Image (cartoon, rainbow, N blue to C red; front, side, top):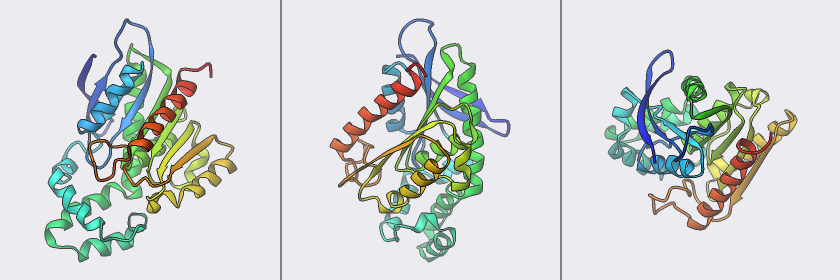
Length: 270
């Protein structure tokens, strides 16, 4: 399978990206922006990109943490942060003031990574990331292997939130999938033109309990939104490299829903 690392200019910086291409000739394919979890473009995200390529999609996984953020969000530091989050209330990441107070209460060695978490999940920074992703989608539209009218996005956790954020700023995005990501600002929902699919864990209350608000906003805006909640599944249930949260039955069903959705929205006759 053709694969390579590429650097994409967003206008303000260069992003490191992983590109996976379908086998075969010079025909144009639909394409998917694959957006990472807090762990960056790791082996799991690269594997997901290759899965899409095997299904006939050009898959591009940008590292939104390229640069200084990546130096702080190392696997070791993220592990420390996860230990802190295990003791935190489920709504912590939705409330910046609570997050700041919580970070200040933690041991000194955990504070820098918690501050990095707060930064990358803050509304102003996520707006910047959304514009970065728009540049990534536009880069895909320039590739000779890509049908520029058939671009979608999928993201996981942090990336799930960014997938729908991209949909709020890219009117030409055709399809968007959210894996257990936070809602976008609801006042931005009317700008979405893509069809949206959400996949959530029933035990992931900090995220899943807010989904009806997105559903209501999407319906009021006249947009297509479908979502499915998996009973017994926790946050990050799709990630098969993390045994503590992976839920195989839910992950298998979710992948089938992903392919059905993208096949309809990106490979269909729309």
